[in-house]
Every structure is written in structure tokens, then in C-alpha cells.
Picture 1 (cartoon, rainbow, N blue to C red):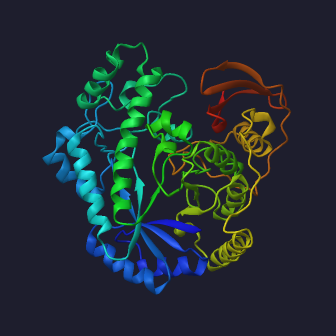
Picture 2 (cartoon, one colour):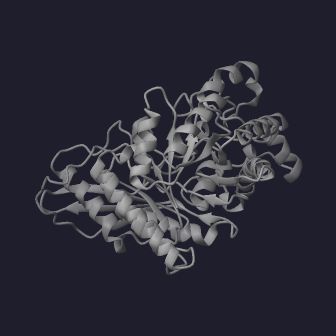
Picture 3 (tube, rainbow, N blue to C red):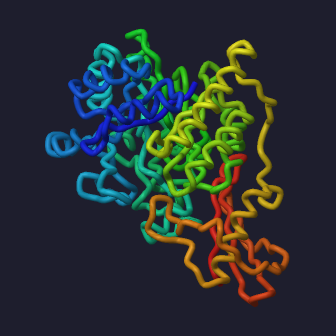
Length: 444
């Protein structure tokens, strides 16, 4: 019921990490290790602490230990953007983004081979599929500041991937036209769905392989199927997985714990009906670690049946781990008392009117106050935001009415003025599907 992701890196004390999991009441880990030998070593440590190990498998973005060899041996496997640039020598945001294209038969064979090798490790309970996607066609709005780009309106060709010749030819053979002939290929729904379906085929091929070993399949996709299908070509409601942990990382998106509720509501509606719904929540992506409890409350209220933390390192004090253990024990009792299910009241959709979300608007207006005071709210940081000091106070705002001045299928832009300081601001809300998945405030 309570999981975490963990990567075995040289600077990680694995004995301490597993001891902290046990102390916090974590029952399972999705573990990424560099070799079979490392997995075997870590599994023995995990057993001593009562932790079940699932392999955290990096799929279409190969793990760092394999990238250099693959780039040299198979440069034709790597994906291509709308400009015709290959990831072999083109940097998409970060140098570690070296995605291979799922349409190639050779890539599928490689994925199956790697999956089998993982499944044959003694003590592996199952496999978590990660990076089973394309490059982010747009980023969460706060992260765009890290890269000095604005992605409010059009989809830029340098970040629009899936244009590998093999994928393009498959689409052209099926539909009779080249998507690049469209004025904006990113808005071509056939092309968008086709790329999603190619990723789904790869995910389900790996899932079938894992199930053939009698092991559990989990996955950690983007936030909701609607967000994921647009941003990274993941239509994960069609994936044949047993348990899924959508990455509802509130500190990347809205900084409001209720984001975990709203995303989970939509995910309950759109997931594969045979998949158990969890929630992947952040403990170390810019916000206060103790906010995890409000995030978990929100996710369980929305219908999540399990939680995975990114990561256990965020529970960085004995006091915080003890509090988490008390919380996890109480939820296990709730589940036991309700026939193995955490009860919730099903909802059809969240409300995309930003002004009814008190927590969201409190965060937005707190940042307006910081801008009025002459402070920066964006920086090169883990979540693109300057950390807020909750103890700091600011003069009250005297805001005008928010005026809607621009909108498209995923952005609503408002103008607002603080009459006390006579400073005006542009407030942007990002809406995908049925949830608000980001905001920004800019001085005018």
C-alpha cells in the first residue's frame, strides 16, 4: 500500500535507505540498479528490512549505464523531432533525454530482452515501467523557466518528437498523408493518437512479458491520461498494468495539495478498469516534506488505493518517519476494515474554474504579494520556483477583478491589478482535460 522509488547510486547508503523505509512503514520499493549484481545485493538488504523489491525499469529512455554504448551501436534507434533532428546529437532540455523510438522492431526486441533479464532476477516481485513515452512536447509551466522558454501557445518543433522515419512511414501507410503537411501537426488528433498507440504497444509488450513470468506490472506515467497523451504520448488508460502510480507531483504543477485529489478523480474515471490506481507523490521537489500528509489525504479522498513517494529521502528525520509510520498504519487499518479497499466518494470531474480552488488561489496570490515586494518567484531550481518562506508576511493585496484576456485549448490568461501598489500582473492557468495543472504570475 505504501511504496517508494529508489535509485542505487554511489552516494546512496542502501542499508540506511531500507532501514528508513522500514521505520516509516514503507512496504515496497521500485528500485533502479545499474546491474543484475547490484539488484541481487540490494534485494538481500531489502529482505532484512521486510521490503519487497520491484525493478524500476527505464524503457524508451535507456538507463545512463547503457546510453553511450547504444548511441554508438544503434544511432538509428533514437527519436527525431519535427525539424528532423535526432536525439543522437540534439539536446532536448537535458542531455540525459536520449529516447529511442517505439515503432522500430529492433527497439521492441531490445525492450523484451531487457524485461526478461530483469524478471529472471531471483527476488524481484515485479517491474515498474518508467520513461515509456516520448520527449515532453511541453513542460510543466514552472519548469519552463529552468530552460528559458515560453510554451504558452504553440508547440515548438524542436520539442515535438516522434518523427522518426519508421514511425512516420507507418502513419502515412495507415492514413495516407504526412502529418508534417498540417499547419500544426501537434493539433492533428490522428497523429497525436497514433504516437500514443505506438507507445502503448511497447508498454503492453513489456507487460505481457512480465506477466508471463507471473510477476506484477506497475508503471509511473505522467499525471493523467489526458495530460500525458498531449505532453508525452502516454495514453496509459490503455496499458495492461496491475497497479499504476501517476506522478501527481504537486510541487511541479500547482503547489496545492488538492492537485492530488483532482488528478486522482480524473484517473479513477479514465484508467484501465483492471488496474489498481495509486498516486505518485513528491516529498523532495521543492515543497516542505511534511506537506506529504495533506497530499496523501487528498489522493485517498479521490480514490487512490496506494501511494508511492518520490522519494524516501524526503522523509529525512526520525520524527517525520515516525509520523509517516503512524499514518500508514492507520490507512492499512482503514483498508482492512473495509474489505481491502480504502473507501472514497466517487466524483466525475474536478472543477476547472480556478477561482473556486481556495488553495490554488492562495498560492497564486501569495506569489503576487512576493512580486509586489520586488522578489523573484522563478529560478533555476528543482521545480523552477524560488522557495517561499511561510513565516514571512507581506502587506495585504487590494486586487481588481480578474479579467480574462486570452485563452486556447489549454491556457487561460487573466489580467489583474493590485490597487494598493498600482502594479499589474498577468496570471496564467494551465488546463488539461478536467484539471488545472499549473499556473504562472508575470509582471506586466
